[in-house]
Length: 130
Image (cartoon, rainbow, N blue to C red; front, top):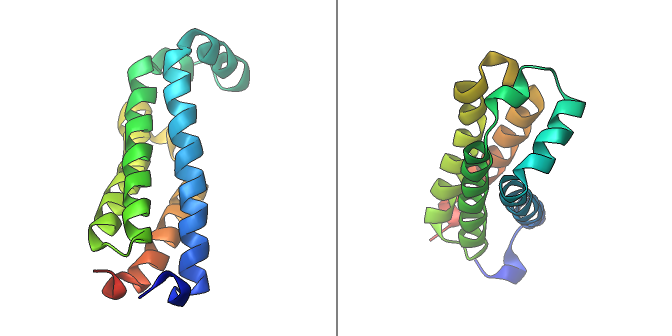
C-alpha cells in the first residue's frame, strides 16, 4: 500500500502517534535532566506520596519507552509490521511501569482507553503491513 492509498484513519492515527510520542520522548528526557525543577512542579501539582517515589530513572524509562513507541510508529508509517510490535509493546509497558513503580493509585483509565484505541486501529491494518 502506497502512502497515497493509505486510509485516512490510519494516516490520522500515525500522525497523532508521531506527535504524541515525539513530544513525550522530549518531555520525559528533559524531566530527567532537569529533575530538581521537575520534582518541585510535581510537589505542587500532586499528592504528597508521589514525589518520594519518582526519581530521574523513572523519567528515563518513560522517555525510552516513548522513544521505542516513536520508532514503532515510524516503522508502521513505512508499512513495516515490526513497527506494530514495537509500538504495542512500548505502549503496554507505559501502562504497566507506573503501576509497578507507584502502585494502583497511578492507574489512568484515560491512558488505557487511548492506548487500546490506537492499538486497535493499528491492528485493523496489520495485515496490510509488510
